[in-house]
Image 1 (cartoon, one colour):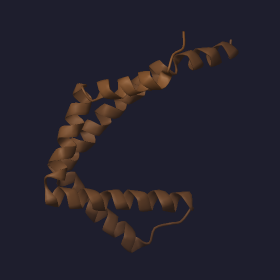
Image 2 (spheres, helix red, strand yellow):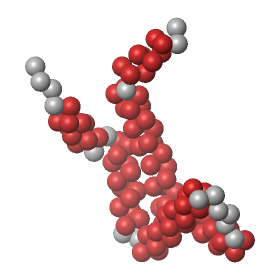
Image 3 (cartoon, helix red, strand yellow):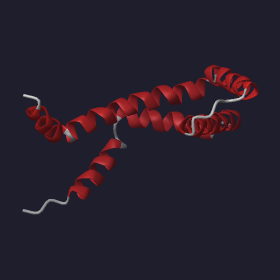
Length: 117
Protein backbone atom coordinates (compact mmCIF):
# COMPACT_ATOMS: atom_id res chain seq x y z
CA UNK A 1 0.00 0.00 0.00
CA UNK A 2 1.40 3.34 -1.06
CA UNK A 3 0.73 6.31 1.16
CA UNK A 4 1.00 9.84 -0.14
CA UNK A 5 1.95 11.74 2.99
CA UNK A 6 1.38 15.04 1.19
CA UNK A 7 -2.29 14.20 0.70
CA UNK A 8 -2.55 13.64 4.45
CA UNK A 9 -0.72 16.91 5.15
CA UNK A 10 -3.03 18.81 2.81
CA UNK A 11 -6.04 17.24 4.51
CA UNK A 12 -4.65 18.25 7.88
CA UNK A 13 -4.17 21.82 6.59
CA UNK A 14 -7.84 21.91 5.58
CA UNK A 15 -8.94 20.51 8.93
CA UNK A 16 -6.76 23.07 10.72
CA UNK A 17 -8.92 25.85 9.27
CA UNK A 18 -11.90 24.38 11.11
CA UNK A 19 -10.28 24.49 14.57
CA UNK A 20 -11.27 26.99 17.21
CA UNK A 21 -7.69 28.30 17.34
CA UNK A 22 -7.52 28.95 13.62
CA UNK A 23 -10.96 30.55 13.48
CA UNK A 24 -10.06 32.87 16.37
CA UNK A 25 -6.80 33.79 14.62
CA UNK A 26 -8.57 34.40 11.30
CA UNK A 27 -11.18 36.63 12.97
CA UNK A 28 -8.47 38.64 14.74
CA UNK A 29 -6.47 38.90 11.52
CA UNK A 30 -9.52 40.10 9.61
CA UNK A 31 -10.27 42.69 12.29
CA UNK A 32 -6.83 44.21 11.74
CA UNK A 33 -7.20 44.08 7.96
CA UNK A 34 -10.46 46.00 8.26
CA UNK A 35 -9.03 48.72 10.52
CA UNK A 36 -6.74 51.16 8.72
CA UNK A 37 -4.96 52.36 11.86
CA UNK A 38 -4.38 48.90 13.34
CA UNK A 39 -3.24 47.59 9.97
CA UNK A 40 -0.70 50.40 9.53
CA UNK A 41 0.58 50.02 13.09
CA UNK A 42 0.88 46.27 12.73
CA UNK A 43 2.79 46.70 9.46
CA UNK A 44 5.17 49.12 11.17
CA UNK A 45 5.62 46.67 14.05
CA UNK A 46 6.42 43.82 11.63
CA UNK A 47 9.00 45.96 9.82
CA UNK A 48 10.70 46.73 13.12
CA UNK A 49 10.74 43.04 14.03
CA UNK A 50 12.40 42.20 10.71
CA UNK A 51 14.97 44.98 11.17
CA UNK A 52 15.81 43.81 14.69
CA UNK A 53 16.15 40.22 13.50
CA UNK A 54 18.47 41.25 10.65
CA UNK A 55 20.56 43.36 13.01
CA UNK A 56 20.87 40.46 15.45
CA UNK A 57 21.96 38.11 12.67
CA UNK A 58 24.65 40.54 11.56
CA UNK A 59 25.56 41.30 15.19
CA UNK A 60 24.79 45.01 14.85
CA UNK A 61 23.64 47.21 17.70
CA UNK A 62 20.69 49.55 17.20
CA UNK A 63 21.25 53.27 17.45
CA UNK A 64 19.67 55.02 20.44
CA UNK A 65 17.19 56.83 18.19
CA UNK A 66 16.13 53.49 16.69
CA UNK A 67 15.53 52.05 20.14
CA UNK A 68 13.49 55.10 21.08
CA UNK A 69 11.38 54.77 17.92
CA UNK A 70 10.88 51.04 18.49
CA UNK A 71 9.84 51.60 22.09
CA UNK A 72 7.26 54.15 20.95
CA UNK A 73 5.80 51.71 18.41
CA UNK A 74 5.78 48.90 20.99
CA UNK A 75 3.86 51.14 23.39
CA UNK A 76 1.26 51.87 20.71
CA UNK A 77 0.98 48.16 19.87
CA UNK A 78 0.32 47.30 23.52
CA UNK A 79 -2.60 49.72 23.54
CA UNK A 80 -4.17 48.39 20.34
CA UNK A 81 -6.83 45.86 21.30
CA UNK A 82 -7.03 44.34 17.83
CA UNK A 83 -3.31 43.70 17.61
CA UNK A 84 -3.31 42.23 21.12
CA UNK A 85 -6.19 39.95 20.17
CA UNK A 86 -4.25 38.79 17.10
CA UNK A 87 -1.13 38.09 19.17
CA UNK A 88 -3.13 36.08 21.70
CA UNK A 89 -4.85 34.13 18.94
CA UNK A 90 -1.52 33.55 17.22
CA UNK A 91 -0.04 32.20 20.43
CA UNK A 92 -2.93 29.74 20.84
CA UNK A 93 -2.59 28.66 17.20
CA UNK A 94 1.16 28.20 17.61
CA UNK A 95 0.56 26.04 20.69
CA UNK A 96 -1.75 23.82 18.65
CA UNK A 97 0.78 23.61 15.81
CA UNK A 98 3.54 22.69 18.26
CA UNK A 99 1.36 19.93 19.70
CA UNK A 100 0.65 18.62 16.20
CA UNK A 101 4.33 18.74 15.34
CA UNK A 102 5.11 16.72 18.46
CA UNK A 103 2.58 14.09 17.40
CA UNK A 104 3.86 13.90 13.82
CA UNK A 105 7.50 13.66 14.87
CA UNK A 106 6.87 11.22 17.76
CA UNK A 107 8.41 8.21 15.95
CA UNK A 108 11.64 10.13 15.38
CA UNK A 109 11.74 11.42 18.98
CA UNK A 110 11.15 7.89 20.30
CA UNK A 111 13.96 6.50 18.13
CA UNK A 112 16.39 9.09 19.43
CA UNK A 113 15.32 8.49 23.01
CA UNK A 114 16.32 4.83 22.62
CA UNK A 115 19.88 5.97 21.86
CA UNK A 116 20.09 7.57 25.28
CA UNK A 117 19.22 4.36 27.15
